[in-house]
Length: 323
Image (cartoon, one colour):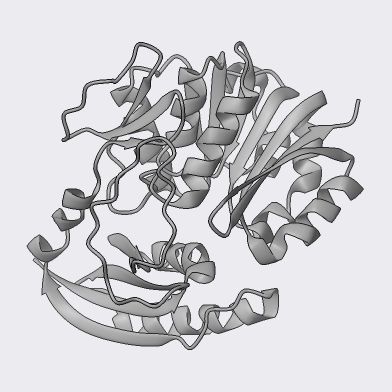
């Protein structure tokens, strides 16, 4: 089968938004390659290793590839994606001097090639992410394994925001909590939270493909009874189903969202409503230039900032709802 490959050269800051644009445009897969130069600092504090070969992508830059079926109207898709990328500047997201490339490729050229770079990854003292096709033996008894088959479209844990969020969850989860994971993607944070001792996680996503992926990964980790996956956002949840369908009872103890700052700013009040007094909100996926505005918005909405965690240029807030 032939596929149309659209390559977008942009900034690391804009990667997650542009990736989302491609998913929404109907991409059958999205791959991301960020700067791999020798100058790029890598976190190896937990023994991580990086097998992705070095590349010539400049610091702070990235290449995103979206794959569309042979029948897809790629000219219309590219026109719409270009328009949405230019609009990012209105939201203070700099996509840089964007360049586009286009070609037609065979499915075998991309559908599984990325798997050779996804290896077991130790992200914290307790958590290691293991792709289903790799063998791995835990180094100690307390090490918890997240089995993951993310597909082409969702996080593997190698992006700084995901690893940062898992490490932050490890600090916050004490055991027995009911948690909501907003924008769950592959379900990796929900699985990690259960491994850390959460009683139940409600995983939400508006993308039906993400919902399917999260359910499959919950099954892989034998967590069907501890993770409920729903196609919804937080506002839809607050206005919708009864607690018996959710697996958790509102208000909950912890809410985690690994989403861009612009999206986080849109539903802070919803998070406040869904959290119990004294509950914790972990807000991750925030680029360094949005830290002050997110912190101010959290404080204005009734949260106290307990911790600010960082990984490369990305930030996660630990914010507690005032009692």
